[in-house]
Length: 126
Image (cartoon, rainbow, N blue to C red; front, side, top):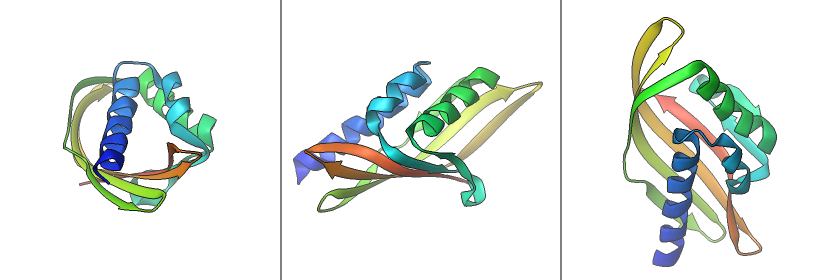
C-alpha cells in the first residue's frame, strides 16, 4: 500500500510541476479522457481531458503566480481509486490586481491497466 501512496504523491507533484513551470500541455498524461474539474461552489471549470488542461493553460495566460505553497497530500486508497487532499496558498496577479488565496485541492484518481489517472478535481477556496 505504501507504494501506491508514493505513486499518487509523485503524480500530484508532477501535476504541480507541469502547471507551475508553465507546461500545462504535460497534464494530458496525468488526466483521464473523462476528467472533470470543479471550482468554487462546485461549478464545472472543465469536462474532458482537453478542457481540463485548457483550464490550467487559460489561467496561466492571464495570471502571474508570485508564490504557491502546497501542503503534503493526504491520500486515501480503496482498490483502484485514490483520493489526494492537500492545502495550498497562492499569491498571483490578474489584470490590475494582486490576490492571495488559500484553500484545499481534492483529486480523485483511478487506476486502469496499472496506471493512475486523475478523473476529478475540485478546489475549495477558504
